[in-house]
Image (cartoon, rainbow, N blue to C red; front, top):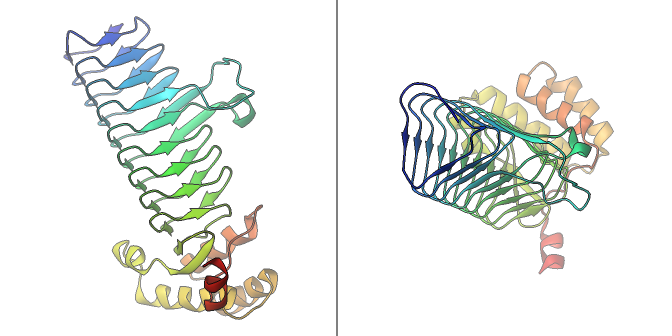
Length: 273
């Protein structure tokens, strides 16, 4: 094991000789650092946590009790290939969080940005890509190859199917699930039901009233007027092109390979019930 500067390691922790632990790291009781794991300065690894390499972790991350980061992917075709997990800076992984390495089929890497919060019992599958400032609430389940845009929120007990993209500042409401992409700034609830814009998230992020109003109109054109997506997006670009948030909204939908969900209607709600 390579130690850089002062570290605090509990005597019951098990540290692999291949591990590299930077200055200011704290490793708690019965934690296990397994294989080629790099831990950046100022990280705190809680009791009974397990970090499995290949894993590279930046500075000032917190890993809670019994979290498991970098275990092998849950994939039938995985045969022990040397894949990896990369974690940025300032993330919080609370108790019992599980995050898996990539697969050869997904370029071999699961990647997490900066300042994300993974709450108790949440799971991130293999080959996922997470931006910055995301919140993944208790027991949320994120499948393999999913992409989470900056600042998105997955509420408690939500489920995201593999290969779905969640746009920037989008929100999936509590106990909801999605099998299709969620565009930026959109609020989705229930199963595959768009319900509106994430107005609270937009305001907290400092979005201007003018941009929010343009997004309202774009949302109405896509979800309320019964147009084809192609025709709706052409109209939005003609009327609101140049508003950065609207351009992002349009670009995301155009790039979707699996489609987006419809807006909730009273008739659809009755069918679901």
